[in-house]
Image 1 (cartoon, one colour):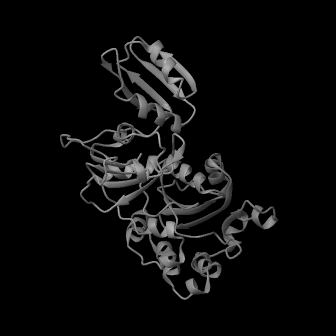
Image 2 (cartoon, rainbow, N blue to C red; image 1 turned 180 degrees about the horizontal axis):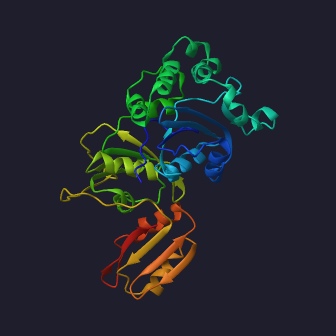
Image 3 (cartoon, helix red, strand yellow; image 1 turned 60 degrees about the vertical axis):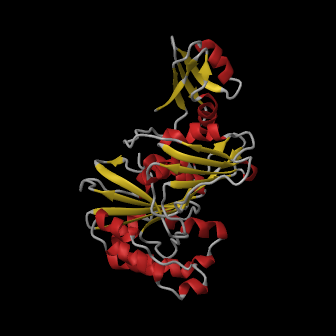
Length: 361
């Protein structure tokens, strides 16, 4: 599933639901049941306009929001399609919109429990007024002096359908990024590119292992691995392939380290020391058919499945192993375990036969 977002990861998600049937009324309980499987939810706020229903979901932890978006983006909801983006809001202040479709799951007050029943007492203008003001009421005096975020939400609410939402949020809205943490500033300044910079590699990692993992998401043209700096640069054949790889692999555990991935401006790659590993690959220009990262792996072209399965279990503990005549079907406990196997055993030559690893759903 295509998971690129227009904004950096945030614990608040913006849900855009198109073509919901008129017989179906979306409520907080429905959203909570769909999303609480990914982690604790702090708040939910629903608002509607025209043919499109929109909602905010605030998770307690960022990782929950990332996983929820990864799995739910593009899902069918009651015959309609749900698009999910990371929101630019810093928080949902439901005290400002207490009578709208807002529920605070961190509170146990009757106001939260009865929020849905009080929807009809609110007009669309009231909801719009509250949403466009709640950001300024919760930010610093410096942020209050600028109407950028207020105007952004106002324009979002004034749109008539999902397509307008996409046009609005794709526009470059200037932000005073100096108020953010340096790491967040780096994320906000990124521009999509087919060149990725990956940092924080485990010391055991080699350039070949990096290739084995990242080539599962697209055709690689170049790899420059600066081992002393635990950093690598990877150039894909297309921007879309780089986007997909970044979405699935950013912040994931790779052996004993959690890697971070950034888009980099396109540039030539050159090794600067004898320790650097530099690799060039040539591919025919063609559509690359990749699969989502999964703990389910199919290993083919295996001459001795029993021997290889024993070697695999030296690296990871498998939930289930099924041996075929020349194949092994693995079900692992996590995507991180799958990356270990892909890194070590992709193109592994055993008894003069190279093995192939396929991601399965």
